View 1 (cartoon, one colour):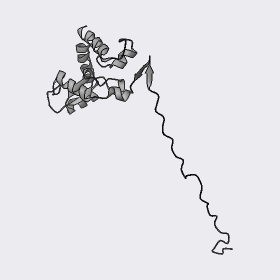
View 2 (tube, one colour; view 1 turned 120 degrees about the vertical axis):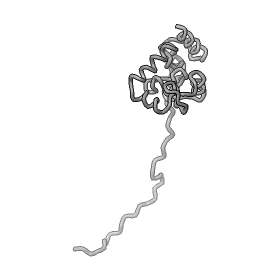
View 3 (spheres, one colour; view 1 turned 90 degrees about the vertical axis):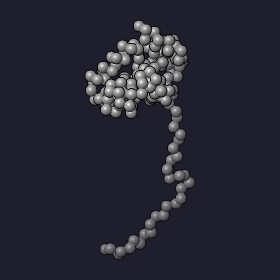
Length: 156
């Protein structure tokens, strides 16, 4: 039998003392990557191209494409960021957008760029000071120790 109305009143909710949603706790900072007492920056920080590195790349290789000589250029990581190629100028190549696309599509072209750079600067051209420190090739993470090592590599 349907009366059309409900004789029992709806339960009313009482206001609660606590908030409806839990407040989020502030996230803890991740522990920095420590290696032999040195703080190693994150991969993203180490592979980023700084303005200083970009200007040095232009100074060393010119403001035009290495392959075709076209002038609007992009900085290409010779050893890719995903493979921990640093954002240092030795690992950068000025390429136009067409040649930059080829470097990512054609493995043979990318390999040729790597071989050419290795012939100029040695097999560690792609590394930064933290990589060399972790490999035990330099005693500390100072810029002086890094540059000293890289100069020896260039001469060898």
